[in-house]
Length: 345
Image (cartoon, rainbow, N blue to C red):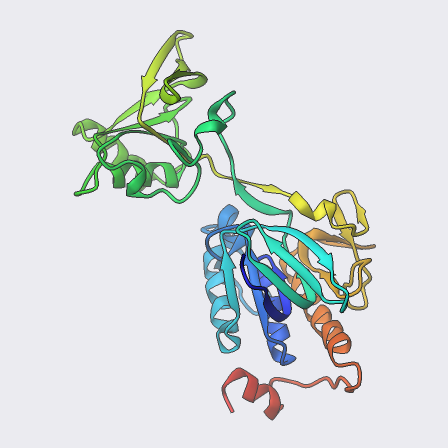
């Protein structure tokens, strides 16, 4: 049983708005913890347009999604937030002392005075190959995330997907001391969404016999003695063939899932959390929602709007955590207190 972790503020979501929420809380002297379903920070910004240009961040004429996340990571460094990645928040409940108890999919328990939901359009989770019976082999022969040599060393590996992650996994698995016995890239057609450089390296590896590519759509499984032996494929010619394997790594991208948020008893409208625009509090005291997860009259799903929401939510948290104190508006240009918190005094 994990011991509860106490924190003044818990931020769900490590995308740009979640990271800026950490910064604004830090300016207010509030320490916080961050939970995200992905194994790294960045959220939708990094996953969907990491290398694409963004032109509407104030004061930054141009940056990519990855560059924006790097700048936000640098900005929150003085506040040293505790990051718990690769896990989804499973439940939220109110304790007798009015704190919130939050449990994650990995069994971690947090007890917090304030909760900030910055989950964008939901938690990003790996897309799974939809085949009846395949889920029984997950974690044994079928892996949906975190490609690792322990999944393929000395084995016949099939990698399903057409993006950078799929091709990089194949190239990694077909070389070195931890190489697979064989590597097969599986996709429904001989066209890929991966960067040109990875496609070129994949084709070179195929030409050299270090791996191969098979086009086809999985339609069934071959199972023998509780072991997955092969995938049934429908090839581009409309014929059925079998693809033998020991291990299957799916790299099919990520999809956002609203997940357990819908069961937390918060007021919702069209799968979004209803908030007030004074402090972006939800229908439950002490729980705030910022970014694409919330809705209110005039809502615009823009990163810069999320930054504004995070700022007012942080001030709302101060009022809740320190009701006896008068909240003063201070400026980072002149405030010695803010300079101390930023480590530049």
